[in-house]
Image 1 (cartoon, rainbow, N blue to C red):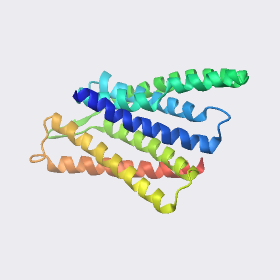
Image 2 (cartoon, rainbow, N blue to C red; image 1 turned 135 degrees about the horizontal axis):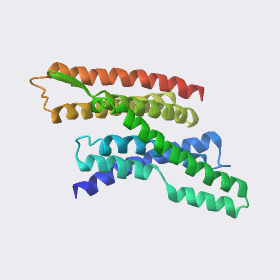
Image 3 (cartoon, rainbow, N blue to C red; image 1 turned 120 degrees about the vertical axis):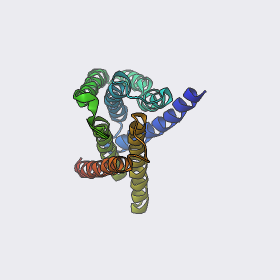
Length: 235
């Protein structure tokens, strides 16, 4: 039952995120071509490759429910093969044979490439010492911190582009950005702390390490989010 609830929770967030991203992309680029579905499928493929390597192949110690919520729930509902198929059929039905062929070719090749790049990134991050710098009495899970930074960068770019294209007041944009950044920093930081706890560190005996990891992850992600905002404004 816990696994089902985890998948349902992750799926709800993934579906809402897909709707927001694809809707924003369509408002930006129009509906002459299925840009929105293409973008979410490529992004989802890259994240699936990266997180599969991280959470499963590298055997990071987290519960199956957590993995299911991310890989099956969130990314599974964020990407959409059925919508890709329907949009391709509509293009064929409307006589846009070249657009349909282009959508099939780009979607398949780009998604496979994105999966491959995600797996390469994950393997590269954990190639040296399992993605951890350790010393007597302490460790830094730099692999997971870099993955957090990659996620923060992608989220900030997408959020900046969408907020520029969707008709919202400045106040609502600020509130959404603050909520998004706050939730991401909190969850990514807590995940790192849980990782340290699972490897034998405690808040009582290793408080400085815990706080340093949490703050370091936050500062790195904030810097990356700032860069993503700058990149998103130029797109």
